[in-house]
Image 1 (cartoon, helix red, strand yellow):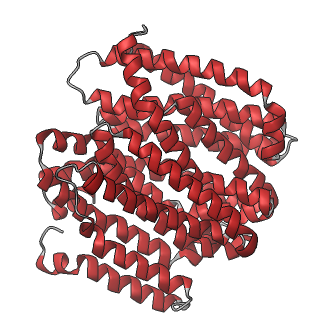
Image 2 (cartoon, helix red, strand yellow; image 1 turned 90 degrees about the vertical axis):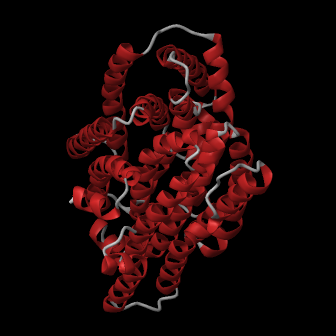
Length: 473
């Protein structure tokens, strides 16, 4: 199947992009897909209230991982494509630097444990397991960044699957046999599997890294990563912080409903993540070669594929939610179209932010994402009390739209980079996504048959000419 699609889409570069994308996609589907497959289990053994507490824990873990990782994943990928031949020394310096970060942040957490417990509204034990979970994830991300930069997509996929299968297996076993709250058993499983992955990563690092601190490498890491930290924090605001706000303003039950709908919508992020994993090394290669026309052509073709997954998830959001949860969570289907649209815009935004990363203009990523993150927080606090958790989905879409427009304007008119992809390249794909969201949100296609027909029409609109003429997309 993979070879047939690659042959149909055509082109050596697109074939390479699709090959690695399929590896990342298969790994993500098997790893993240297992999370979705177990979603029906967790939603059946947990009330929306309990699932809300679990969602707050996961949001805290993702936030902690940003501080512990300090944005060094991007530095690893970028330095790997430098002309220097001392990557092993650079990796060793980065890991030593992270050890210093871990020690400092864990020390601070002891001072503010009561504040964290009060704000998050979770037990102290969960707070500390969240800290450990975040630390383990940050190290795992560094190893995956190395695999991504070196184009070892198959190994990347395998280790992702092993990690997820191991964690989910432990979580299910612990929930069933331990006489604890379900979310506490879940957290213990996450920490245990994280510790096993940490040991594996350290063994692999020992084969690659030179364990010595180099001031030159440290300066590179700090200079590159500090803006990325603020960039990632702002992204976290857009993807996870809204659940903390919902929990604070409305309660854990609404948080649980929103989280389930958000997770189903996140299926779109699997496609986007698979693309970005394969795209980054190829993008750097093409930029080094100044093959701008190749970049434009590849993106135009891939945008159609990303939009296809989006419109499918939007039109069949109701059916997907019933597959992944129970009727207790059914009203959360309203969240899914907006989340999917948000991740489609995230795909476009990631393309333009890639130019800033390549040219080491990271400070702009930090400034703009911080501003949009503040906008997102303010809008959530204003709209959620009046409209409920659905408002968080609206603000997510608006925030990603702002990021797209701001970053595009910046690379074209601010930094004035050459060879940037025109925004119109995404025009047709974006139009189909907007139409699909409008039809579903305004309940114009409530009957399944109508939605199925609309989906087929859009598929023909995107790929009909290529299918009929048997040409590349």
